[in-house]
Length: 230
Image (cartoon, rainbow, N blue to C red; front, side, top):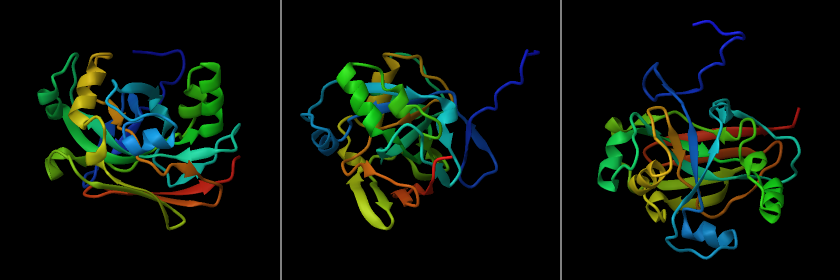
């Protein structure tokens, strides 16, 4: 097949312990999936149906340098468990959802909090706040075959060695299988989809010069240096 312009490069993530890469089709994100973060953001915790948004696949950042984005003075970190799918479907049952998981990674949902606040007040979409370039830093993917289904693991984020976020993924309001099932009611999930599963409390601002370290037990670490905007 021939194209009128060069075909865009396939977004992908390295797989731990191999020279292989995981090709990324779509990035789905879950909002407010830890009760303490719901409270932190001014909401009332409960088990209302989860809500979702997306980031473009090329928003993934694999480099250790995170360029501070333009048009914002209040960029926040949100550490998250990322789930990578090797298969999918529609209207998946909760009890069948885990078999579609290829592996897990550490991710950070970077957010222009000031632009998000403006969008909320105006009832506008969140793309400028959530879907900007490099807004989805991610570490290597650990195959599920290496560690099994991940139901409980410490999740943390430090800025300049100061702990900011400290929780356990078992505290998620909606579990990983439930997230996959609910998402499949809205979209046809496919191999190559990845899901950012929500962040615990402790989100906060970062500035150029900061060093960010995100980690999830059994999966590993993601280290970033926040760079001055170009």
